[in-house]
Image (cartoon, rainbow, N blue to C red; front, side, top):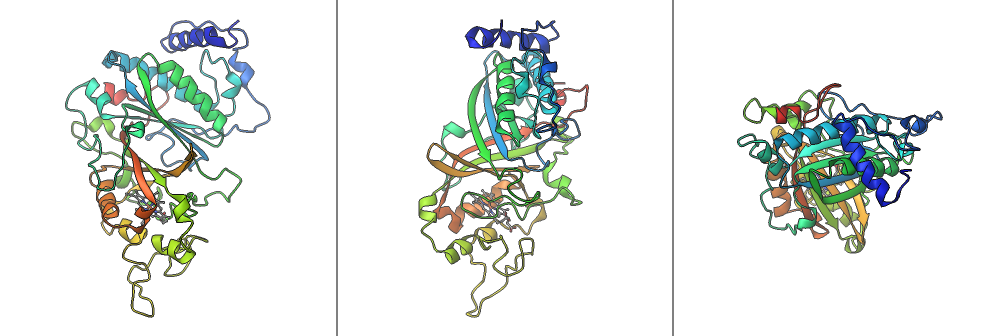
Length: 394
Ligand code: HEM
């Protein structure tokens, strides 16, 4: 019986690979996927993984997030990558729809996807492994910034698997299934776990709060905007045309010094951002979504939004510089912070100039430090019957 223990795990891994490669799979006792179906409807929400773009980028942010970065094994060549992406495709299709992948020894854990999305990206070394001359210029480590204190612990990576769901159990199981199935191609590099308010704790559509207590994510391009595509979706026709419909993701792990932040009085904390803590409204008045008046002056003739305020420094007047932010909180091992993530067409044109301004002057820097950095090309979406990464591996 394949019911746990080291032997079960080993055999499960073999079955997983065999199934994905079209080898008839043995079904161990207690591993019938039908056993996983639920009839109470709880946790059943599933988001289709198929489409022009991958799910998990503009889909409503889920409560839990896990980024898993891998490094390629030296022997993983283009043919092996083709096999690996075939396996990942099958796993993503199964897990996000609530169907346990073949040889899933815990199908009950797959049965409640709870809006699970799995988004896959590639780092520079993976694109190089496929062949020379296909890498966009921006797919490289970011230029360094003066205040960076980056550690390799959360830096770089050749393959990214980003899992998001409203239930951490669904994420843990999906991450484990994928990890098991791709272990002969890659080795784990880093993992980051994040969270936002749980579904039900706030009205749907409420902007998240970060651990400094701020409403975070208000000014963000909306997928409903006419020019949203040109903010985030790759549309190159050159040597990186394989990425059309994909995106560029920047992930920065940003530590917060909450002990000293808490010592600042409320007006000081609000001026640091330029918005109120109570509802995220601009200090120049109105409610959360009222535009900030950066020209407003107080009775002494001083700017209401100080010159050092984060929103003033981060704000872009150049529309081609905008980014689509999708952060999550982290709070582990005695450290708190933000897993800052943003999508764009080209980080060198979009993220970098904003971060240069913040690096130069932003009062928030007194309490935040960038400790991890990675850039990934998020693969284009795929339809049923197609394979993730097909355009890259063609
Ligand atoms: C705005 C927090 C890092 C870019 C904001 C706002 C908050 C905030 C509270 C105002 C509400 C909103 O519009 O979302 C933080 C914290 C950070 C951080 C706590 C670090 C821990 C960054 C970084 C970037 C960035 C690294 C990009 C390089 C922006 C942009 C805006 C913004 C573009 C909107 C500015 C505007 O009003 O036009 N941030 N942020 N932030 N932030 Fe950050």
